[in-house]
Length: 280
Image (cartoon, rainbow, N blue to C red; front, side, top):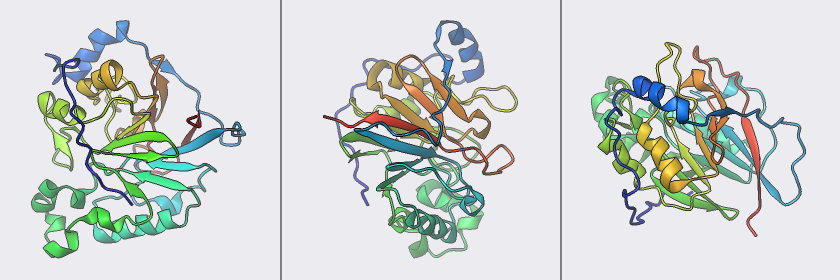
C-alpha cells in the first residue's frame, strides 16, 4: 500500500480561474459549441486483450453495494474512483477492504469520494454519525485499506504507467473533500504533475459525464482546463454524478464516468475496461 504526497513544483501559468466558473451550467452552454465531446462505445468485457497490453477495469460509486454486484471482468489493474461506502463508517471501510482482498487483480488503485466522511478531517468533526466513534477509531482511516494502493493527491507507478488520484470536487452540500469553485479547486489541480498517463478524481470535469438528472452541470471548469491545457492524460477516470455514467473523448483524453450505482443506488452499471500498450 502506498500513500505518498506528490511534491512536484507545479505552475498554474497555463490555467486560470474562469470568470463563470461558479455557474457551470451557464458556462458550458457557452463552451459546448466549440468543445469536442464525442461519445465512445466502451470495450466489450469479452474482447480479447491485445498482446503486450495492460487491461484496466474501472468502477466508482459502489456505495457498500459490492455484495449485489455482478462479478467483475478480467483485467490487470482495478481502478475505483471513490464513494466505496455510504458514510465512511469503519465497518463499511473494512467490508470494502475485505471485498478487495477477494479480487484477483495484480494491482488495485482506490481514491476516496465525498461519501468517505471518515477520510476527511473536516467531516470527521462536523458529521453526527462520526461523533459516536472515539478519535482513535477514525485516525488514518486509509490505513484500513490494506488490499489496494490508496491515492490522495498522490501518484503511483503501476507496470510503468503513471497514475495520479485525488478525491476533491466542487462544493456538494456538506459532504467530504469539498472546496469552493475557482481558485481553491485550481490549487488542488495544480498539484497534478505533468506526464500522468491516467488521472483519477472523484468529481468530473465540466462537460464530460457531469450532467445531473435536473439537466444541470456539476463538473469543474478548472479541472477540465487542467486536463486539456496542462496535464493531458490519456485517460481520466471519475464518478460522483451517477446519471453521468458513460465514456466520452475530446479527441485526445478519454473520459470515463465509471459510476457503478444508478441515481437510485442500484449497482447495475457495468465496469468500464480499456487496454493500454505496455510502456517500452
